[in-house]
Image 1: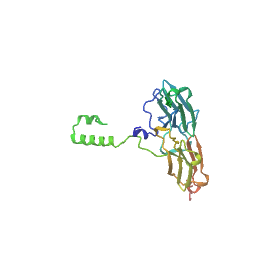
Image 2 (image 1 turned 180 degrees about the horizontal axis):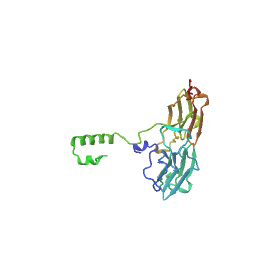
Image 3 (image 1 turned 90 degrees about the vertical axis):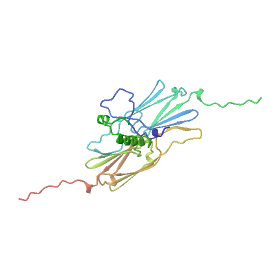
Image 4 (image 1 turned 30 degrees about the vertical axis):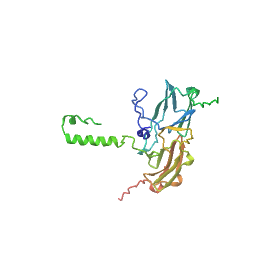
Length: 134
Length: 149
């Protein structure tokens, strides 16, 4: 992957998928890890403050879109005096190849990390070719 | 990046200054400078200051709360822990790796000294929230004015 890709840490979304937001909080791109094996691909996304109720995962025309809705922090009687991160929605889209068995995609979220398992279709799995002795 | 920045620059002809600017822009282009992507602290924290307490929040997705250590001394909060990377087997390969992993330690300067015994921490959905009440001796005191008549 390109070096600048590795620096992504809650950077602002480049292309909003939905219509322009007027009064909404900012949308961030969550950091992702993708690990591939012979039979599946595992996608891990950092979605702090998200749980299964706050998440929306859609697969449409080969594009897998993950949206997480996060309400802004508010501590009554307190002022944000030092800030290293902002709070807002998350959104990121991935293109899914035909090698993925879309009916068998699984999603689970734990401690703010979404784990998506994308199994490969049978035809895409590597096959060992036996050599017949003649 | 290489375009004139203002309309005035568009009309002015300053070859030396423009060459220098071009050189600076090119240097920056090749130094890997990406605006907005230079911050790499983990975990990022926010500090919310109230009158009698301070609330510190940190985004620690994927960090086991048991692996988190929080210590308080005076007005310094220390946060340390580890984010375990995914285990990669022999037949597996990273296609993309953006999530940082490893040990971390953050020292956060609080706006005032706190009651170390009364600090409370909660972890939910990858977000840590620490409530730190202000030290009684440090609280602001109202001073009444005595009239001498």
